[in-house]
Length: 406
Image 1 (spheres, rainbow, N blue to C red):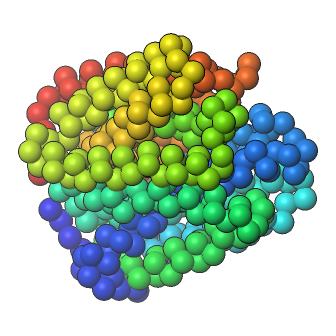
Image 2 (cartoon, rainbow, N blue to C red; image 1 turned 45 degrees about the vertical axis):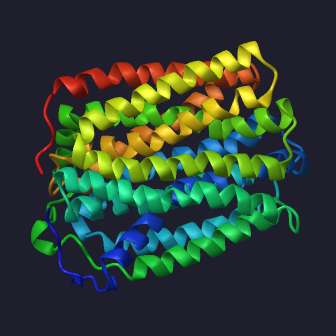
C-alpha cells in the first residue's frame, strides 16, 4: 500500500486517516446527492412546472450526463495540475449550480442548470477516486473503496429521507437550496485534504500528451472489462432511481414520506454490502467478490420481475429491489479497484473513463426504456436486462484470473 504525506504542496491537511476517509467519502456522494435528495419531489416538480413525467425524469438524466461528461476533462486535467485545485473549484461550482436550480423559472432552464450541476459534481467524483488510487493499490485499494462506500452510501439513506421531510415545510425549490448548503459543507471537507499527486508524478506535457494518455487508457483491456461490469451493474440502480418514484408512488400508492423511508432502507443495503465488501476483498479477492455481487444482482432482478408479473402487492417488489440495490455496494468498489489496478500516473484519466461509462449508461438507459411509459413491468424488465448484461461482462474479468497485486 502506498501513502503520501499528510500535507502536500497544494496545502490542506487531513487531520487523520479517519478524517481523510470521511472527507473522501463525502466527496464521493455527489452522484447520490444530486439525484436522490429531490426524488420525492419529482411528482410535485412535474405539476409545479406544468411539464410531463418524461421531462421531469430528464432533469435526472441530464444531471447524470453531466456527471458522466464532466469527468472526461476533469480526470486528465487533474493528472496535469494535481488533485486539489480542480477539486475545490468543482465543489464550489456544485454549490452555486445547486442554488441556481432552485431559481429556475421553467423546466427548460432547469434542464440546462441540472446539466451544469452534474458536470460540477463530476469533478469531485473523479478526483476523489484518483486520490484513492494515488494513495492505495491492490487489495488495499479495494478495501479503501469499500470503506468509502460505507461513508458515501449514507447519502442515499439520508438524502430521500431529508428530501421527503423538507417537502413538509418547503417545495422542490427549497430542496435544491438545501443541496447548495450541503455543497458548501463538501467544499469545507475538500479544503481539509492535502495534495496527493506531487509535481514529479504529474503529466507535465500538453494536450497531445493528455490525448495519448487517454487513448492508452481506453485501449487497456484490464480497465475496460471491469469498467463495463461496473457500468452495467450500477445501471439497474439508476433505472430504479429514475423510475422508482413514479412506479412506487403512482403505481403502488406510496406517499412521498413512505417512499423516502423505503429508499433509505434500500440504500442501507449498499452500506451493509460495502462493509461486507471490505472484508471479502481480503478473504477471497476483488474478482470473486465481484462475481458474487453480480450473481446477487441477477437473482434479485429475476425475483423482481416475477413479483411484478405475479402480484400487485408492493411487498412482492420491495425485497427484490433491496437485493438489486444492495449488490451495488459489492460491485462498485471491487470493479473500481480492478479497473484502476494497473493505472499509475494516469489514475485521473482512468477514473474519468470509468465514471463516463457508469453515468452515461445510467443517463441513457432509463429514458430510452420508458419511452412507452413508466410501469412496474418496464422497470423490472430493464433491471433484469442490465443485470444479465453485467453477468456476461463479468466473464472476461474472471478469465483474466488471479487477484490483483497487493
